[in-house]
Length: 479
Image 1 (cartoon, rainbow, N blue to C red):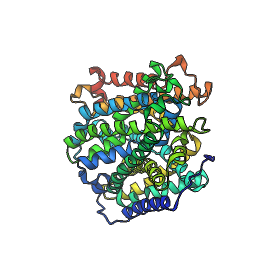
Image 2 (image 1 turned 180 degrees about the vertical axis):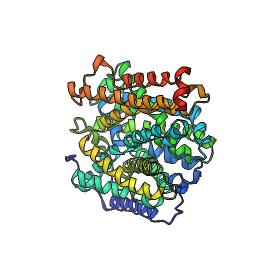
Image 3 (image 1 turned 45 degrees about the horizontal axis):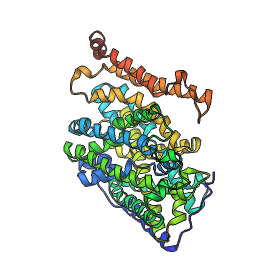
């Protein structure tokens, strides 16, 4: 698969890119402490500035997908794929963050919490879900696409190279290496998009140029676009993934204090709003200046080739690479920890945690191989988001929220927590497959016209509620 676009780089652009790559490698080979807590969550030492930087950079890895969404649909991309996530991130900060960090003395992952609240089988099932959700196929695809544009390599080779250079520093240095690099990537992503937005606004006449452009359909400038209320509402349900996102939980576990976690997330939301304003404006300029792109996923790179001079072009490409690689690394590491600690270590029953870093390095290989497979088999960013969100939310949401409930009466019995997760994900996945088989990947036809997440959540809620009944809770909890 060829993107049909090659970057025309000046030597100064290559120099900037080379410095960026050398920094990644240098961080990776820096000597560090090897204890488990340091490797997995940086000894719970993240202060607010670093916490914000790593969360913002990690959670904005779908940069090419954001450009594609704005190019194709306009402002509704912000309304449907931005606002819902702000809402649930704020809910996470106000309701969950202090509880997650406050009870994390011996916890590293979501399956750890499920094991503490329920039982071993629920934790293992949660580990499987967390692995599938965290496996960074979307970011492998986007990294490969950007490297293919830069170097002209075949897509598979570009993805493999991107994976190697993305995980080299966490293989040895673990989570702390990821966090240190994320801090730089936070600065680079804002610098790149501030630069291109400012240049477009000054060169082409400001926002009035976009409003009067004949290449931007009127619906693109309407907050709802061509979407119905129901179409936007679906994205609010998909945004429920925020409450069960392994990246959020991992960073809360790593925060210096419960207050750091709560305040840091609120500050991150403000950063996301600003960055969404930059990417939305940039996407609209791409639509105005480059109508009829054969692949709208290339909206941002194509705009760079159209308007940016040497030096600034290299900075913008790095600004695109930074959040993609931040997410690729962070979610690969989360998936690797899931394999190393939550599956291998838990199944082996080791007497201590000393071998968890070793198992996690094995997990890095497993996670990258799985992500590469998904990226090749399903090379569509928005479809990947939709698929994993539709299955993961029904599978994880209710038992995980119940595990953090302030009152024990809202925590279901362990056996029903397991059944809630299994049926929620199973029903949603079956519904999704039915829709694909009867309408195709692009135009699925679901039974009753319901999106897969809805029957999945209903099935999960049914079993979760059964486990709250006094007559069923006590015998199953004791068994």
